Picture 1 (cartoon, rainbow, N blue to C red):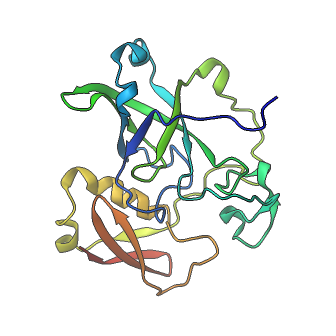
Picture 2: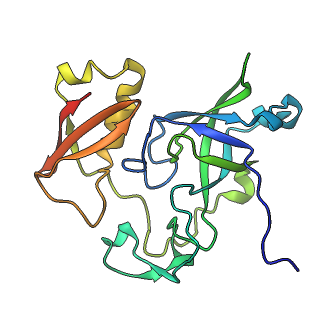
Amino acid sequence: MPETCEMKIIARIQSDFGSKFGVPRQSGLVNSLTARVVFEPEYRCPEALRGLDGYSHLWLIWQFSECVREKWSPTVRPPRLGGNTRMGVFATRSPFRPNAIGLSSVILEKMETDPVLGPVLLVRGADLMDGTPILDIKPYLPYTDSHPEAMGGFALGPREPGLAVEIPSELMSRVPREKRQALTDVLTQDPRPGYQREDGRMYGVSFAGLNVRFSVKDGVLTVAEIG
């Protein structure tokens, strides 16, 4: 049996995140985020998507393209545990895996046909940075993919959004109107690394082509600059 297998990139995502920083830690945490799945030329085939519009949710199988490494470690430090506790890599969703593959459940908003790009999928709730390679797409089946009784290990449930967000109106006006709610929701989730949450420190998120700089103090995230 072969020890490796070839994977083909079938599509890439177009999202509002120009870098990894600020991307939601899991899919579905910020459903106000929109993105587009744009197929590679070889796969711009409407017949391959026949029947997909009958599903409300999809699985995206993709590559952690910014985290590909030749070597792997059997343990990692999950941000959920503050970045100080090691867990087995297969007990986490860390990108630093033997195969840098991610799995995301997204909402299929609609399908449309672009005159140049062919069929395009509009999705909500994706946790992928712009340009991420997509290896496969599968329909989400609620009768078998949903397990409300499942145990969540050390990640029993989503963290409650813990930050109030303050964005001065003159800065918010620089954000496209249709992106404002998504930006607020992303910041509410506290995009700072779990092991690096210093009050007063300035952080920056690349969002929708803008550099959003902010600091946090006493549970309030204040945006200082958008440009």
